[in-house]
Length: 369
Image (cartoon, rainbow, N blue to C red; front, side, top):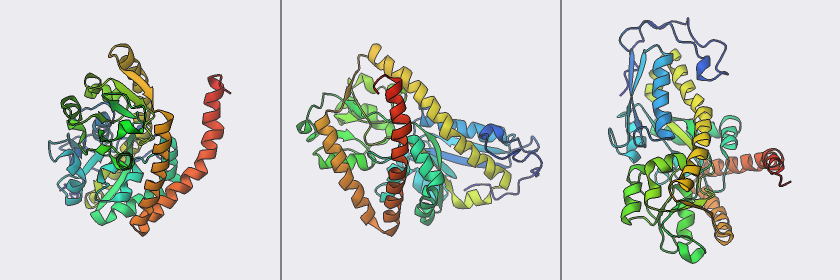
């Protein structure tokens, strides 16, 4: 459990947040904390291999920023997947206090908390900026808090890997028959959509995906985008890379805090921790978009990967099946129904503006309008 209940020696109101948090993590002044032995030490468990491009880098950067902004008074020890608990055991670890916090993705908890999928991504759902709007402006955070409260966990957004790719396939998929019996790793509701179209989803943590694809345990897998995927080595085991990532139009990472440990933190350190996570929503997204563009080119030019769009017949079936799957999530209970309705309302509100502004601008910029 955390040592955050210890009284933080040397902490004063001086050096608190100067001018609010509008400027991101850099706007937080370093508290006037004596450069002595750390007053708070936490454990952070992640679902990622150490320093994995994208979420692994984000988790490490949060740790580094917290130490820097607290002048060393708040030290967080990062444990990669499997070092403290298994990759998919981080939720329970935070709930039990084995870890004080975690960095992960909400759709991993679909079996335990079906509505959790909404807080990372759902098929044909919100784009990254739309998702942030829903969480911060549309009531999503309050629903997320309510969903995890019975487990003693406080969740927040912490990084974003952007719009995902559709996945790596060992052979082309040209029609619905090619999906039947396909052993594919696709977490969240995307996997359920694939199952209903005849595929055979396989649940595996990130660290096991390459070997499973290479040895034939999997015929296909999705993970994130070109930057992270190339680092995982998927291009060595499969050569057909499909787009778009219908199942994950947004890659929000979640930070999980043991609520008791978070409450025990001095106010100054709590503000630093939350702001370090929030700053990653913009920083990690910019980093992922920049590196994905470079890595996508490398995959094609140097690794012999063929990038293909899903055939329209498959895309239509995915879209129609996803509508039914999403509607069923509303039947899981009153809170699930409220989350579904809130998410749908956000999409209906934001979609016309996204179309009027971004989509039309992109078409005009590219000469298609």
